[in-house]
Length: 274
Image 1 (cartoon, rainbow, N blue to C red):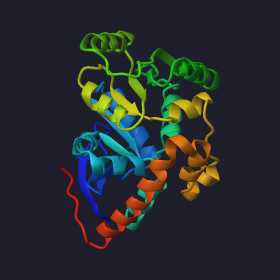
Image 2: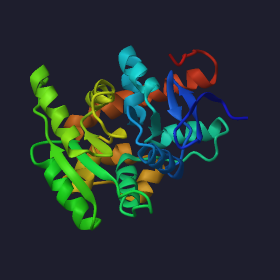
Image 3: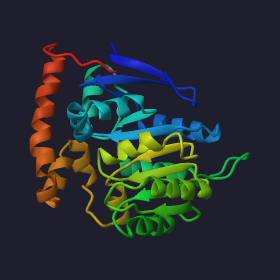
């Protein structure tokens, strides 16, 4: 029997359940469900939706920061970006769940948005985040890969907190471009906080945090082969690619996640979804 803890209705009229993984409600979802839901938001010109694309790293950051956990649990979707989250869903009876990986989701949404319906144009995209020049490089790569793609703007914020005036100008620039989807490529937890803080002021149908997808799809960082992604060892590939930056994330977080997940599965510790 499924152990989905919480369900929400989306504008796509699909009931998306949530599985409690260490107190984070991870959407019991697959790629097709995610695409249909996002398409529904855009078709209905919905506002205030945001999507956290979350793996083990995000779940563990939520253990240290209750505010970040609340941001995830208030998100419209929390997609299972890592294979461990998919496996836990399947063990709890949600056999239809599959990985909704940030780079794949970005490409799939962009591709779906190329084919306008009879009553509306294709999707309009805005790219926010990355290092200097990365969003522009990503825009060029995506437009080459998907001719006809509408990227209506890019913006790279500075590596510091924005002033209120700077933030207001950024929001105005995004809104002036009239995007349907705003893709946010910042690190966790910075990008999730940005999503939650701007979901009501940015006039797009959906804001989606995809982190390293900007680097992978722009070709500035290597992406693990598919067989490594499916095996659950993508973390090792990334660790070997960037050991100084990522060693703590994987060598500390991953063992802790396994132990806490066992404790939850055995009923030794309980987490509530706030």
